[in-house]
Amino acid sequence: MQLVIVESPTKSKTISRFLGPEYRVLASYGHIRDLPKSEFGIDVENNFKPKYIVPQKSKKVIKFLKEELQKAGAAILATDEDREGEAIAWHLVQALGLNKIKNEKLKIKNYERIVFHEITKNAIEEALKNPRDIDMNLVNAQQARRILDRIVGYKLSPFLWKKVARGLSAGRVQSVAVRSVVEREKEIENFVPQEYWTITALLKKTQVGPVSVLPRSDLCQFEAILTKKDGETIPKLGIKTRKEADKILKDLKGAEYKVINIEEKEIKRNPLPPFTTSTLQQEAWYRFHFPAKFTMQIAQQLYETGKITYHRTDSLNLSELALFAARKFII
View 1: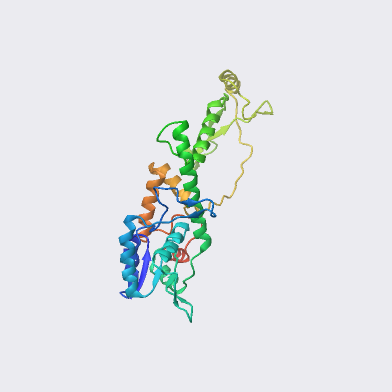
View 2: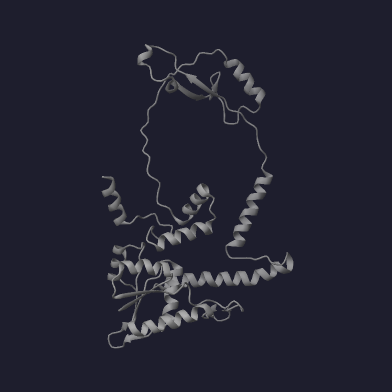
């Protein structure tokens, strides 16, 4: 039996449905190692070396995974393909002792790393055919972010408690975002509104033929914006007061209007691109007023049950399998 390790039990259940009985899919329940909460945990003098510990909640998980690893002999690490997923795979290698060579002569490792962008039978089977090494660039990127979070949070938060108020917190992203919000709010407060008016006429086509050949009356109506007066172009902010607008309206009363030119343009409208993480969060807020965290929780559940592709992404690429299925359905 082959052992496959993923992050969540939901994901493990979904993948189990696609793999045969010769595979056992288990979950690590997220990160199995982390920086200690009770201390700084970063050796700044030693190249910012992190001190990792196994949290209490993960000790039973590691013990269980080690027991299953003994039975299987090797593991397939199928955590997510982003930085966090790659880091979880790397921590599993360290915690389970998978970094030892299984066969010194042949240099065979006792683990494989596989990734897939969607939880489908085809995607998983393709990933199993193409295992790769752990991407240490992604692991190092995750570690750098985690270390920065710890340095900023643990150093600046106590400073805020002393200088501002207890209970405040600072963060690598949070503090920058707060500054951006404050600066924008100051711009709004300092904004001086400027009054201007535009004049739009609702015009109706004059009957020029038998009623039977004319289109519906509502189709004969159209809007026109006043852009010129006495041959001179009116700039965007040209009509500054209602008094000026009323005077122009008075001059226009009783005037005859003619359509002197009609232009036709062919417009190609492309479909909306696939969601990225940010556009998914924006659309969920616009339509349903879902906070970003709640949106990501729903997306995580949908991904783990094989309903959507991976949701933490800025890629606009579509699955070839999904495109083929869509074309087949439409045509």
